[in-house]
Image 1 (spheres, rainbow, N blue to C red):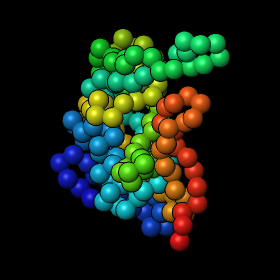
Image 2 (image 1 turned 90 degrees about the vertical axis):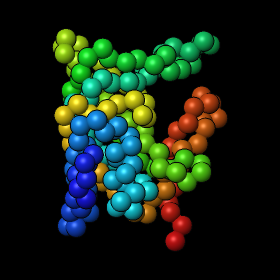
Image 3 (image 1 turned 120 degrees about the vertical axis):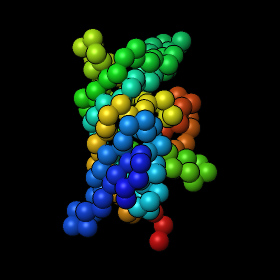
Image 4 (image 1 turned 180 degrees about the vertical axis):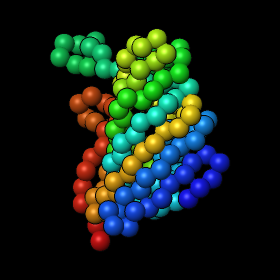
Length: 160
């Protein structure tokens, strides 16, 4: 798979996909496109590379004792390098591909930051290189957590 936004290849021996997202490609959109092309509905991935800016939320203390919530959206003010990024690929309750990604970045001022990245708001500056480890017999479905009322992946065995 090679197009103006991304490049990816499938390694038959390890059953993994490796590739890169090219300049101006959104991190989530690009990874979803790769997954659709290779028929992946569940998996884990890692990545590193550069973004024009990073947009994420971070965990914060909740309004009630012993609770947590997400912070307001954080966006860096310069380009960043993803030092470490890991995530899961699954589906939402409607069967659409969904990604849960956490990353650590360093910006042009050498400030390290990171958190839970947001879809449609993290565009490649030069390249983001990734590896996807597909899960063939596992179903990941994002559902609302009863205690915290935020969407989380639930894990189950795929039905034959």
